[in-house]
Length: 281
Image 1 (tube, rainbow, N blue to C red):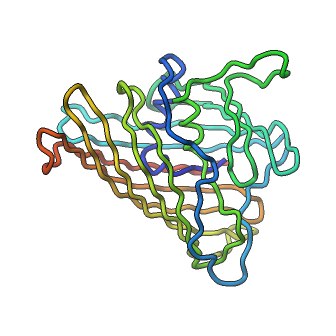
Image 2 (cartoon, rainbow, N blue to C red):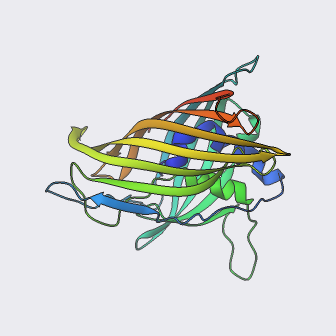
């Protein structure tokens, strides 16, 4: 289990989409290629392939917290804090089937409580399918979550490069996504996240890869005759256990400025996001 680039845009938004997307009409979604990773530099020796290591029957627990502030609102949105479990149901070669469940909602939407999704993914974090309920035989159709839910789950995973990389390596992950699906039509965004492999350092009994991230995004939305545009930047860091193939923690901050076609040169609203994901056991 790992965060993807959408984490940098706000776990709060992703979790809201998961809580409401099943009850809304599916909207068209841009290309969601799971392998949109371009390596710019492979870094120094020794190089290694960053991979998740799934073990059948294993269950990991994460604490996800997110806080967002929107300028101009009389009541700032409260923080979102949930406990998430990731259970590995099956492993076949490089691919695994995971059960992704919200175990507890400390704060935020109560709709998230008990959310249960099944995800098919590779050891690089390439997601092929997302479904509600346990997968069934092919002769029996499985319930499908909305496109919004599928997007949200895909955005919660960080896809690794195919190449072996070492300290100093950096790569770019680009995606076209839909944000804030509770808004009619959603905000369409082009996102580019630049990840840098900073160093390898001891952690517990093993070694961890420490990565930093820089994010840029362009948003667009049309509300009647008014066009809304947005530009944002963010930064973050990731700690990944190389020995066990697990994400240990991830932290991200981002700021998005919004303007309208009525005042194209003026930022009319600013969205600040601060979120983290930490493995607790």
